[in-house]
Image (cartoon, rainbow, N blue to C red; front, side, top):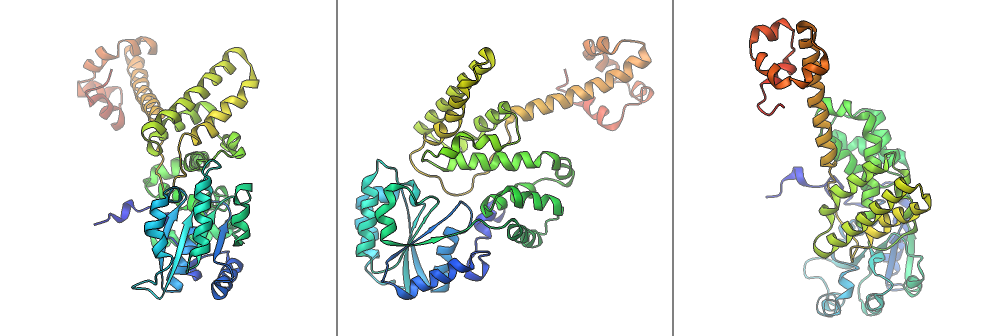
Length: 399
């Protein structure tokens, strides 16, 4: 049985009908016209920025027209045998259980310039198919897609207005019985820049915080939303994009901390040889970062940015799909926990030093001995230790 708590909200709340897709009414009308006029053109390309509902729209078509949907992505097109054995017959035969059938080619951008065969297979599929093809992509204006554009209807999905994103977030908060301050929801909606998937991922991350942590971290949340989006852009895309060289400039975070976020989350997206190549790109970026600090040669910044962006993205063969729960860097967490321990230790030493007429520095140095002395409840009461300081002293790992 699937644990509902583990389902990404971007999947849980994926639009299932045209009426649930917000802000794309004109595209929906044109899509209906395309389906009515089929086979005047056999394929339609839904293109636009990430998270605007391209794939959701394809599944909404299936629901609206009681159609069977056969999904492929760019990596499937590399396998000619799979196309001939599976998609070939499926593109000719009627569905056994549904009234209609559509073939979805998701994230066509993933076909690299070296992979000419993939585009050839796709063009051949368009010619032979007895059913409409729905093709999705972020950037279909590359030269390699010239023939594909000629053979397809082009429908551009626009970025969602932040007010539309905000209204959807509010609806989901009601469904999840989640209380979130309006200014925080607004911030998420604006930072998402029209990417509904990113907004839902951010909201789901926030939903897992307790109330105290939630309120405490409001000031840092804009940073984290931005770093989540930057990581998603680099980790999910395989093809090199000029935007990758400056994606981290929009993250309101120190570059050293960005390195820690990347280092922490690379293993969640990369495995085997790809993991090695991604970590190698990160290490090369770190080499240039060191040269910049030591020699003040800021001309090396372009190389640092290249390896942090395109270098890590190019380590994988294909685009990634789905939702990944990126984690805060564990090293930052360890530093934070250590700072918390040091703060408690210092506050205890300040109280003890005042009564014992010692310097705080001396008390800190002899803390192991003072800990033994403070095992006496009367002394604890005399120097007025609070509950948190008492609990801290009773932990066996204090040094």
